[in-house]
Image 1 (cartoon, one colour):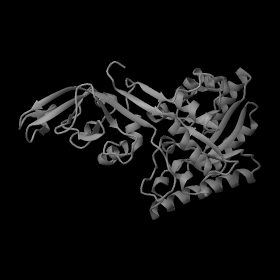
Image 2 (cartoon, rainbow, N blue to C red):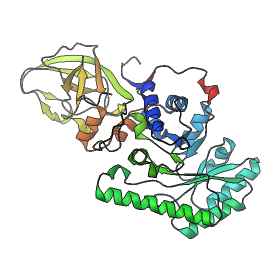
Image 3 (cartoon, helix red, strand yellow):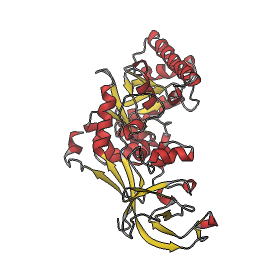
Image 4 (cartoon, rainbow, N blue to C red):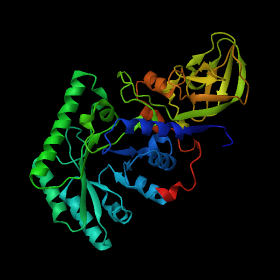
Length: 385
């Protein structure tokens, strides 16, 4: 951490968000904390422990490698993989007691074989494609064939069925609401078909953050919040009383301040030229750390609490800001992504300026940026979870 660049992860804010979201659920509805992509850039190990301690019932990840990493950290809580089942990972998934997603009879047969070899059950959720077009059984016959294969297996256990909403963050629009309601109704029909055929489905789930926040008709037996855990509403223009707190700040330091004359060029491509005599500060992070080049001449940082505009193209390892007429010295701390939604330097504002979503900026924070978690977790927490 010699460079001074770091991401500060406020675990107390994360736990606040978990508790707020839990308060919206009926007592028998489970909450799965989505911690894929290194917990949206926050640090999967620490976030998982904090979320479980705050009341999350289990964890969700995108791929087997993420699940195995959590097991290696000593996390024993239930973990589900959302993505397709890689045949080469099947043995590790069963050995480590990870829940897999299945979407074909071949998936079930593979897990049955692996379970038989290891003499351990393979736990699965059946994915139903209700309109996302990405993964899952596509029709009634395909679904019933998968469920029958599970029932015929001695080693594959059906834990649940689920689907994923493609447009829940657009439910404030007529088109978004209509499509999301259609997905919910298709999922209800699939569940009814499965149950009429005699299959017991212990856990049904489809709600992401937006579905959770919209209303209880999307909660079913479990919800899978992602971005809401990290303090961002999936649709910021919704009128909702839920107070989510951004969890992460990205900070660095000033390494140089130069007095520039009028007309001098800053950074690659001379995209910015000084309008007058200006003080230009260099900050020790760049696009390799996750600050997009698209923020050139659009983004802001905070220097000693005062907004300062980014000037010129963001470099791989450094960026420049205009600190004319403000207190700034070499070594001063700079807030690049603020956790204050009202700040010009907020991550949410940067995402809006770029025409993207907070998810992309959070997940883009590079691996060479140290994560500092506050407060520190109880070292004995591993054993409790």
